[in-house]
Image (cartoon, rainbow, N blue to C red; front, side):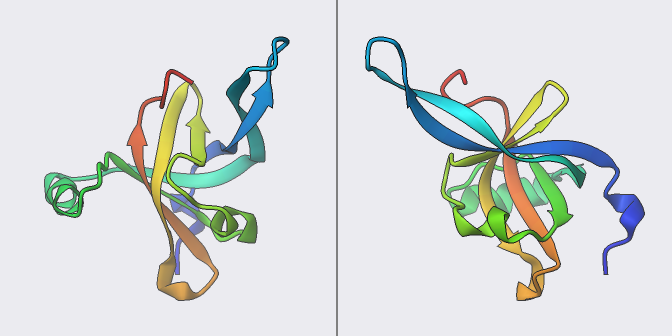
Length: 116
């Protein structure tokens, strides 16, 4: 079981959305899915980075949150991101810990995608 004190950061989880500008051109934007979500943010160590790279993934942080169904329904590469202050964590992998619907682990890469 996860100790509540480990979830000590308030984050916003956003989903990628496509809208149109005044000229009918599609542009990417981000929509809040959940605001003020308690999370734990942990930078990964060297061994974790090596394992992730061997699987073809980049990894800089693991973000832990309490399970919510909306987080696991539409996880696809680049579709969700986490905001923590001015920092952006792009979710590369989402895991439902032990398939217990209690804890979600997000493998993330810090930094913006496509300048967004």
